[in-house]
Structure formats: structure tokens, C-alpha cells
Image 1 (cartoon, one colour):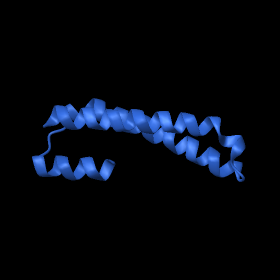
Image 2 (image 1 turned 60 degrees about the vertical axis):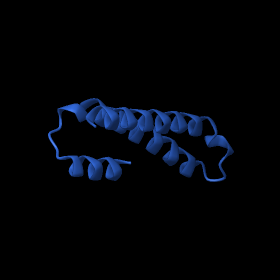
Image 3 (image 1 turned 90 degrees about the vertical axis):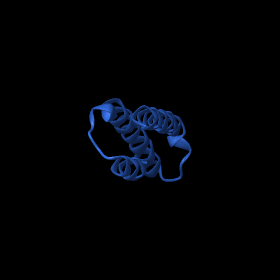
Length: 75
């Protein structure tokens, strides 16, 4: 189960990171450019965070129930 969760976290982080990068390209199209910048930064930073958590997930010692709870809280 550990391998499955860390791959899912890394995949979700990669998708979020890429969506954050795309948001960065369209910041000038937002009526409120600060809101676009905030969305861009949140996507990029949280995407990197999920990738990092997925990378170290195998080193955590949690019960199956706590793994599932932590996974869904992270997402």
C-alpha cells in the first residue's frame, strides 16, 4: 500500500505543479492579476510539497488507517 500512495501523491503533485505553471502564463489575462499570481504560487509550491511528501512517504511508519487519513488530508 505504501508504494501506491506515494505514487499517487507524486502524480497529484506533478499535476498541481504543471497547472500552477500554466496559470503563470495566463496571469496577464486575469482582471485581478494579484489573484492570478496567488493561484500560480499556490499551485507551484503545493505541487512541490506533494512531490516531496510522496518521495518520503515510504519512510513513514503509520498504520493503514492513518496512511489513508493522511493521504486524503494531504490531497
